[in-house]
Image (cartoon, rainbow, N blue to C red; front, side):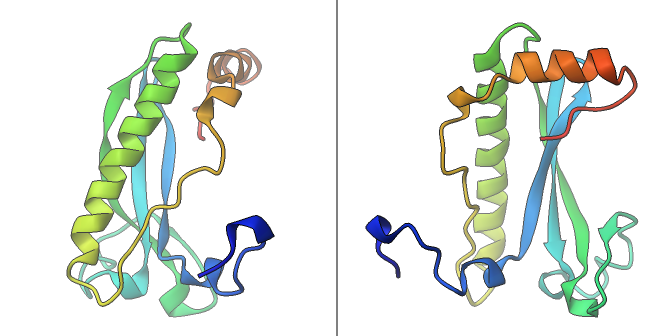
Length: 140
């Protein structure tokens, strides 16, 4: 527990990371996401079948692909479309993580951004990425 007025993270806050959600453009008009989890939170056979991983010198700290989230369509010229799709992807990820945490000892929580997504101009960001890097996918 910590005081909100203090604006300091407790020392254990980022030591409890179990994985992350990767959100990006699947094609020109779809946002999709992937959930990655630390090896110690996966079944013994799951990580053997995973070809996508983030290496770590500590075996239990390696992060493996867990699942893909359904894509959501976005309108290239509508910032609220990006925000709505991101929120839908995060809500889906939260449901999956909540379901997984029921089988574990601790409650898992997906940490949301500490700010509103309205302050990011996704339309401008996506158009600049596509203009400067025509073959590169947008990853948030």
